[in-house]
Length: 122
Image: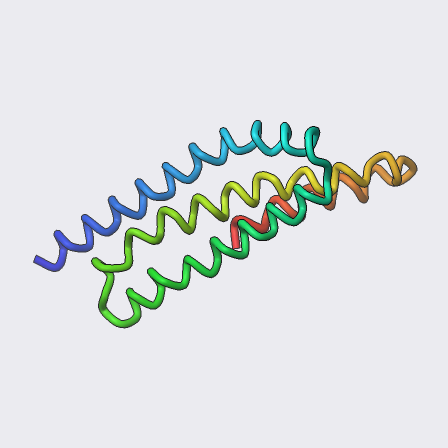
């Protein structure tokens, strides 16, 4: 009986990660459009807020698992992953705004892009 519950949990988590990954692909296009339309300051605030909100929301299923309320709180996992992935997709564009100002330091800009790509993976 315990194995069936674990199997269902593993399938649910796998589906949640697949959904969030698919949304992140679409979010890349949306983030680029927002970068062009609204600029890096607005994009920075919105994307950092989405990541923060996603990490805060992630605490709900983690605490639910800790206190044996997995079934009640597991639905928050998908929304937390989606928020973190969408915000993380937008964060990648922020260091690119530095490129014109740091044209003599292209490696610094590319390393900043690589570093912020890890934010959603936390």
